[in-house]
Image (cartoon, rainbow, N blue to C red; front, side):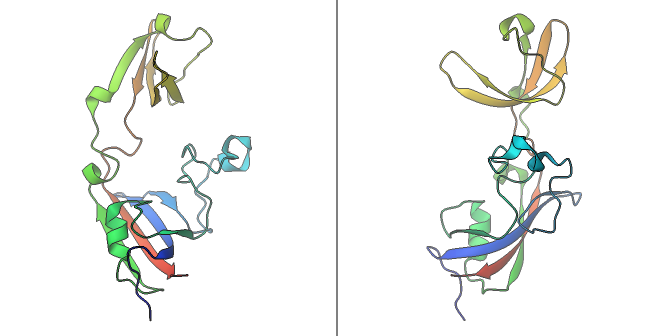
Length: 172
C-alpha cells in the first residue's frame, strides 16, 4: 500500500475544531457549515473564499492538493506524510502556529470624519479598509459611537488553539 510522501497529490477530508468543540471548517458534505444559509445566496458565489459564512473558503467535499505546498498548515502536511489511504489522525495546533495570538494593538479607533460618508458600520460588520497606498486591511467592527468606530484587524480565530481531524482519502 502506498504511503503519502511530500510532492504527492493527496485527497483528504478534515474537520477543524476549536477547544470547545465548535467546528469552524470541514470538508464533510453532511456538515451544515452554513447555518445562516449565506452560501445559498449570492453573497458566496465565490465559494466563500472570504470565509464570511464559516465555510472555510471551499465547497464541501474532499480536498485535493500537493503535499508540501502547505495549503492548510505545515503541521497538517507533516502529519499526512507516511499516512496510508483510509488512515485518520488528529493534529493539535497552538494559536501562535495557527491563526496567531490575539494582538490588542490590532484594535484601533477611527474618527467617523475619516471614514467615507456613505459607510454606516454596525457592530459585527466585516469590512475591508484601504489606506492611501491602496493596501487593504480586513477588519470587524467592534463598537460604534456618534463620533468614532472601533475596528479589530485580528483574524477571527486569533488566539484560538485548533484541532484538525484528518483522513487521507486517496493518493491519486
